Image 1 (cartoon, rainbow, N blue to C red):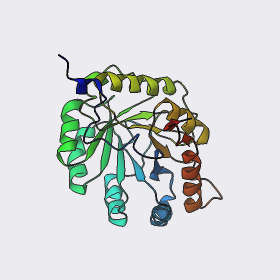
Image 2 (image 1 turned 135 degrees about the horizontal axis):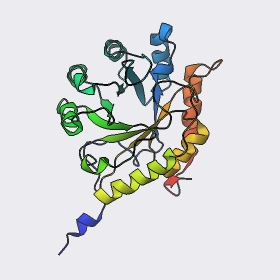
Image 3 (image 1 turned 90 degrees about the vertical axis):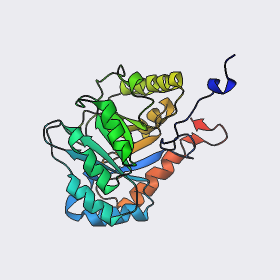
Image 4 (image 1 turned 60 degrees about the horizontal axis):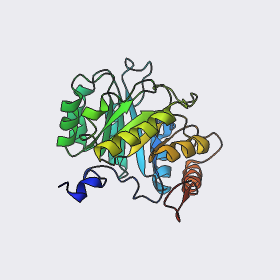
Length: 252
């Protein structure tokens, strides 16, 4: 006889909190900060109660751009107690897991498109106490995830091509979010889905409706000219909270 408990969704013990949170997690993208005044921006976001700092680490190869390095990540960790979410946009993510472990990074994701041994890398990252995520570009399918979905702690879906801020939102990714939720249900896991790229109030609403629970906030939402970061983050967080109807327990 089948155990009735097998019929219920089994959340992974190590996953980021998703549906238990009253509102989606807002991850401030430090790639979009004023890099000449990064400490001040971090302090303003801390004062605003930022959930997470999303840090893009680029090597100029996987994406045609250079952003924050692991040495900058180290300095950021010295400045704040806010959890850090490192997004490795690099050709050789296997070279970074020792630094991630040493710095006690809370969350780290790498791109499936370039990982040579993704299962091993997931386990190496998690061995140091970091929550490990898989990142997928807009045109990358979900075909490999059934072999990894029970190992990872979250999945990051790019909603623009990676590397630069200010790009148009790729609406087709909404179907991928929905498909990923169905895949999770099939495997009886409940993982947070993070979305990254042109996340504003409108696109965030669509992403949440399809199952996203972590929103990377950049120039389309909180890093806006003429708006101080404290006010911009608080305002965006409040508006995102209004997208959820507490009486129904799910996004409108």
